[in-house]
Figure 1 (cartoon, rainbow, N blue to C red):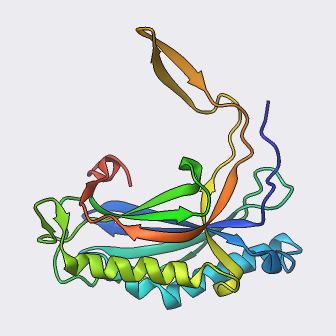
Figure 2: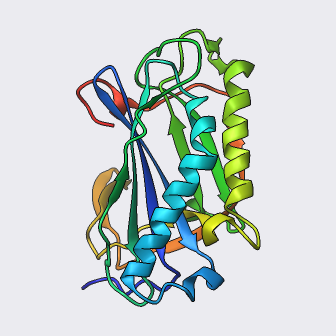
Length: 238
């Protein structure tokens, strides 16, 4: 079987692709069109133009704060916008568009372990794991962790970035008609599998058809504890 069509407004992703020590460091934000904005997206061309406008808005209003969360040997190589979902359509992805700022982090220190990361937590008005999100921002600059906790010099720019993002992309009139959103992607039955132990035996479970979901972000918080993102180790991934 296959999952159903997308039942929400047009949804896009903004990929922030950094580079440090020859390793990609990728973050992704998702945005959903407001009801008013959706009325203007009468074609894929309109939807693509909207995604480009969101990208341009992030670059002009939020890039500087994002760079202030990163060490000075990290570079923001690419910012990529792509529409992932369109209402009443199935897996309707549009073409990626890319900007190449090539701008460095502005924290006055080099990076520590590439797998180290600060975490921003995103919340919505709905409970449950499909309605919560996290962004791992790293690597953490050298000297910005004390006894396992982030120092205030790093927490301050993290707080500035997340609060300004929520302010800009939530509420009744968000920037560019875009709501910061937690995206739960659609899945066909059996696409994801996992094991659970029942009565001493391992049993394989699989997901059922899932049409996906989007939950608009209403709040955020900075985790004060330094975390690890192992897939960012050299040679592993991003």
